[in-house]
Every structure is written in C-alpha cells, then in structure tokens.
Image (tube, rainbow, N blue to C red; front, top):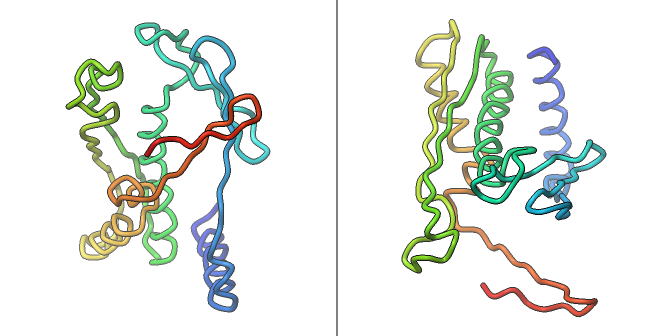
Length: 177
C-alpha cells in the first residue's frame, strides 16, 4: 500500500471515530490449541494457523517460534506498523524501518526452581533503525508519536487487567491471579 493510500485509509478510520465515537472500541480475538508435545497452533481471523513450538532444549521439535519469541515479534512489528502509519499521517517518507529485539529470561523462573525469579522476561530491549531523508526534527516528532502510541509497547509497560478461567470437563474453574 502506498503512503498516500495508507494515509487515506487511516484518515477515513479517524473520521469514522470522530463521527461515531463508539466505533473506537474494538476487540481482537485469537484461538490456540495444543497439537502434539508442546507444539500448538494459533488462529486469528481467517488466516492460516500459526505454528508455535519450542526448541528441542525446551521439549519441542522447533517447528515454529515459541511464545516469548512471538512476543518480541509482536513488539517489533507493532513498532514498524506504527512508524509506517504515523509517517504517512505526518507526511514523512521512510526508506527503511526495522527493529532488533532481545528478551532476557531466566529458565529457573519458568521451571519453578527459584520463587524469586519470575517465569517471564526480566528485560526486553529493542533498537529501531530508521532511514529517511526527512529532517531530524520531523523524525524526532515521529519517534515520540510512535513510542507513546504503540499498542504492544503500551501493553508491555503498563499494568493491565488479565482475567482467565479454566474449564475442566465442562465445569468452569477460576484461574488464580
């Protein structure tokens, strides 16, 4: 999609929200299923299933990225999408956008070997590379817009409510918080 077409599509959505504010509330859905061993599939909308697996050291067959890697992909790709969208809205031409990410995780937390260590990432670091002939002042405004509006980054850095339940043989069981 060209930058002009992207700006037109986003402007139409913004106008729709301005005209009908309730239109701003959306719900995204996904469904996952354990297939074999630790390999799973994830389904989103009408797309082909995403294969999720672990490397052999974690009991998998390495048939796909694992969940914590997908979290990094979600952050990096969300940043890139936001750069494309915000640049289109601001009239900034971008020649390249890419993000390198690293997540530090201690497996002792995952395996319950040390209760002081959380099972998830302790730190995520990313570096975004931009190439553009736009003036640095415009690019700084773009960076500020992306860093303050990226939904995945916001979700990772802001505490959010997560609820769940488990159904065992047809009976719902609450998941401890």
